[in-house]
Image (cartoon, rainbow, N blue to C red; front, side):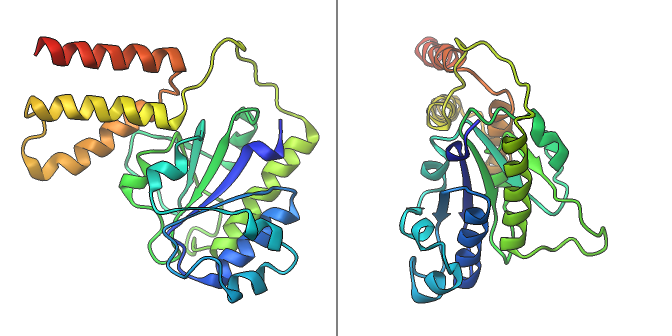
Length: 237
């Protein structure tokens, strides 16, 4: 287990103060990897640096992306935080279930914007969704509060070395970018077969398709096999 394997991804953050506070929060618990995707405020800026206080090194090393898919491409396990239940066939886990996660892999926690959270499309890329237990009648949490709760909990898991996760070292979990390439090949072939009809249902069909593949936790070998299957089906079509 390693603190270096864990990233905190802020997707479409709205406020500079929250970004700075998130940097401070993860440094409080010895994490280093902050990722910012499509930030509304210019990154970095004076407010971000000021609210990060002693975490300026986190800000200077933050990875910034304009593409959501690129931001998650090197992640083995993507855990999306959400305040509301999603009617999606994705594994929903509690904080206590994080002890079952293999933190020897690259794990990313995904946080949505303060204004609207994560969309169903963004959720469809996740291996798991995670809800922080709160007052049922008032579930809204500040972005940095959500980050610090998860950072503290995961930090305690690592320090206690309480994980007993066993899997063959020969089995390598596929990277997000490899799964994305496989899914894109599948989608391309389905489009050629006019599969997505009626057209207005295509977005939800794509969300469901991604959810199916991401929750399977495919290995690199399985991803290569499926890519070959999709490629050969296209040739026969």
